[in-house]
Length: 622
Image (cartoon, rainbow, N blue to C red; front, side, top):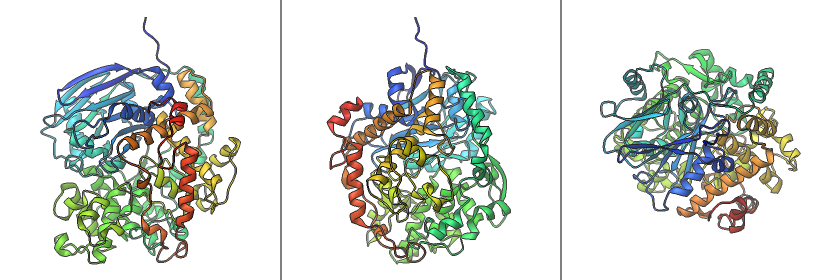
């Protein structure tokens, strides 16, 4: 007699052996679902269980996993996300990257909960999945195409105009270390090189179309939260108006806007890249993800001096800062062109912008010259140079071949003191929030097993009036027994809050729920119970989050990462050249004390390794 799956799950994982061209379906264990939920949790479970320590991230033995959560595809605002993970070619540790769009919901509708991709195809292929039936198809004729060309071709071939497609462009094919996986033309699973892993397997795309709606144990319970959200939609008004970047001038004022490779502390011409300027000059629409009324994703169109195709959407905050202020560029049209190129070629805009900024500072200091750049004056503020270098990176041409390795590896090859300008942790470029201001965020950047991550982290400015934003997390944390703390504090109270926020966010990443929406932990537990039919409390979710984080950390320990990799670039222990942080470098003793306390709070030893007692408590095999 067949066992009924919990609501929100189809109970099936598709396993694809690309080397032999075989596809198979395996049952999803309910105990795994309860212990890890889905999404980021499934990434932790399967990679820890199945990858050997000596695996080459770009070799056939690495596994690329697309994982849904029980809330993916559920009719709830924010329930459109999924997670992609593998061993990272950037950090050499475990990695995951989330994305919204429509693809995850569509995969849920095919009757699957995830895909595990193994091996390497002997030739370029793509995967076509319709209502649970999977087929490997030849992609030789689309290898080399941009993402737009690829999407149009595949939709025509499968005769499904509404097929949703996860895909790579030339950046992924050419194994740019920080290549991303695009979903459609606007939404990227951006961080840690998942596009390079996909390219290393000769996999161009995964197209999906389904018609099987997921079950819910208590649809009325889901509807109650959906109704609450619609009654309180004003809480997301800023997202609907401006997307993720309404406060760029304010960020410059307080020192949170990275400027010229995190060096300068304020951006003089910040108005040129503000959300208001973008809205009033080049924005032509706002779009969103499956099932979500918050239309937070901007669409831009530019005719001159650059042509920017509206099909590729528009730049969000991280992109505007990375390709804009961090490169000294104040032209929103140029930033939008850079965003278009990254989406067309499948490049992570954060790492791309930071790597270009690194090269610009090397050029400014004479470490790189026009002889190295092929005649390009790679100076801060040179928008045309930024655009040209992005194309060269994607195609691995000229200086682009070096920079395609990312700032840390490029610095090692260049030498001559270039290492001081590579603003990375575990080899990955930092997101666009200043560690000298966000001190708990700095500890999160250092210690996160996934590398520097702004989403699964606490950014201090959003939890006080510096960010001009109310958040449910602080009163919620207090209700869980945590204590309030000052903005400047980096003691045990602040580190406990960091851990709590990380736990909430990794739960969202495991459920398939957008972390930008104002759901409380209690509401998240209630809707998870309503969908699955399990009786889940917020405390249960905290334990799952702890299990996932410790599985991440154990994976990294097995693959050679340790406490020595939990360190910030030396730049942040120096003040900025100007602005609000000109006299506020990080204190190395304070940061070191916070790191040690974070380890203790997580149940890790002095080397950052989960203790046997903690692993036994969480049911993780050492």
